[in-house]
Picture (cartoon, rainbow, N blue to C red):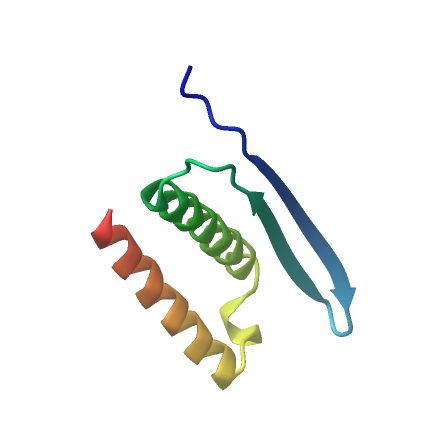
Length: 90
């Protein structure tokens, strides 16, 4: 019938840190059966990376701009550029 069995496990953990900060951890485990193409595998990874970026952007928008430090600003810039580049590729 051409069906291939695969499984996926996703876990998201939020940990309250000092100073009203929250640590977000995202873990994903994928078990592919034989016969999954490299293109299908790559498409899965791209979808998960996009979900991670969207989660990060969601939480970053909750933080007032004046609460960010200089190094946070650099990270925000890199994230924004990555998101724009990823969107162009689609």
